[in-house]
Length: 274
Image 1 (spheres, rainbow, N blue to C red):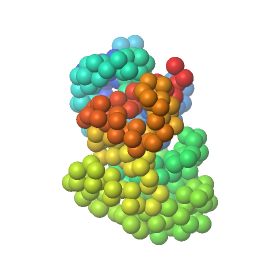
Image 2: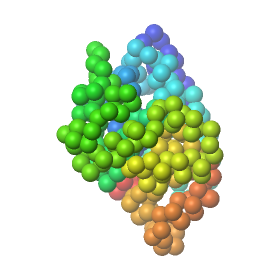
Image 3: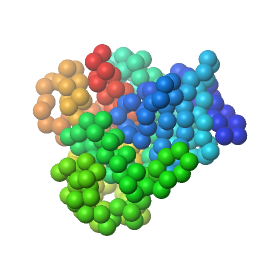
Image 4: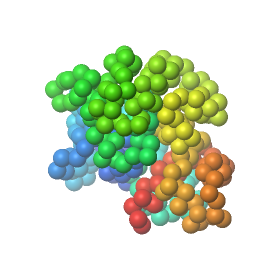
């Protein structure tokens, strides 16, 4: 993909492979909001503003190299889309979400975010995460950073309830005592099936949350998170199946190491109502 780093900006010229709306609104991340025509993005303790100009997108940030990696600008999505286009079911989703890229997210932030996301809606998920930032994150010029593990590990259930987490408060207390960022990083050495099992042992992590952490935190391509939208999509195109584990296994068998990318295009398209 064609892009250039110029001082505190990144200019992205391959608009057919990069679209911030597709990337940020396809369900993989919650640390952003839109103001006018700009997307404001704040993973971990970083900050960027993204907007469109006539022949490019402009990303303004004090840490361009972080966002080159975070936005996966060096990954060849044209090749990924060519491989996925061999599947008939992918034709319309690839056209609709042509600018999707799977982000390279921080493991701890991803885990906490997707535990909070379970049986929740985007507006409430974002509210809870922003409450945590304002309460325990470090303030810089533009944002509050995502709280560190050290900041969260001694918080009690009442604290998380005040943040809006509801019944998930108990999970958050327990998971912050079960793991550290270092342990999460060590897990990356495991094959995907064993890593999934390790994640499911954590409080608040079921199969769908585990697959989201595998895809969005560990960047494992051989996973296919299945929620209501994916189950609905599957039953439109394939023999009716209600067991989500079977749906996941069937789709991973179909798409292989591109399962994660396929899931994002299909999820974004299905949720759009197209």
